[in-house]
Length: 102
Image 1: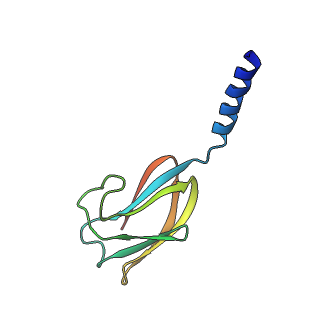
Image 2: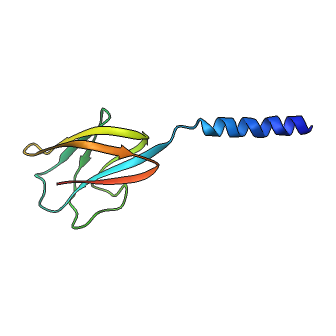
Image 3: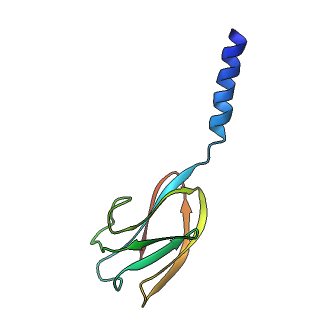
């Protein structure tokens, strides 16, 4: 019985160590910094910024370009509102990263 319990505990620890870690990324713009809708692309997925903020929004706020469940790592992003373009990198880790486009 003790061997079975030890084996089960070891299996739980082993499988939990192999879990892929993910994080969320929220892109936003300050009032007056864009022209209309800004399309943000991250890791071949697009999302739109449709609102502007006077201060940094919370992670996942409405009107921001939100990317959920992104595997940890460093990614390139691009964005455009038709008149302006942005490009850079974002380091995704567990939790949420908020990025201002300016």
